Length: 363
Image (cartoon, rainbow, N blue to C red; front, top):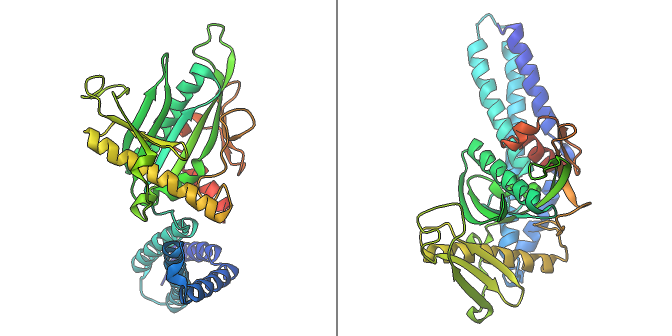
């Protein structure tokens, strides 16, 4: 016989499953699948510029529907099991608990996949930070944000590399770029793009006054791994210079850092933390290609916030999230209204609740 405790666990699991199943969502996905199948079977499909994107989206939608139906079957199986063994004389707690554990793992994975189902969500990501209004305080704040994201990647066991860093004259950093590689890095980080605002008593003010600082975060997917863009070598300006980070074998010794500028657009990318000039050049080209591809896609789709989000200058009125250290402690996301007083934990990389609040608000 199933114990009352296990019965409660069954009910909780069924309630969780029912909370994830939405017939309207399934109907929309099935209509989307039919639409994409019609497009992909058209005579001129392979002449389109967005062929790869459509095929990728088609594959994702198919997987979403399959996962939905799998979770639905799981609910039916648990319901049957509940009825079958509810009044049985056999002691089934251990077996059913194992099944419930497996079911909850599948539900957890389904929840992740449901909110990370956009075409580029599974790609690796480049996250760039630059200091905004606020002088030395803003540069210090930018370094604090970099540390926060590095701590977050550490918690996730993600592979991360610091590609570029420009150190401030007095403190902090003017800019930095990291490369994040693992499962769904772009999907998880894309909501971090925008202006981040800090309010605190400035450690650089002898009068101990409260200061407000701003930093801009940009997140782009590694599109160069998925598709390519033709770049005329004549349109590129390549600068070689000495790395200016905090340390390393080649810093201030050998000119290995590389900056590549695309002259027609003014878009640039640089890398200085790889082992050689060639590796720095290759990585800088990856970043540049991804930025140019994003520009191309925004132009094609007639929208400025399709992937990267609308450009915002790092100053008053444009912030997506505020971090207040004085006169009280609070971190608040202005898009979702999610907030917490655990500022120290957030700055140590505990940002998952903000990430999921944003993802859920987009569905």
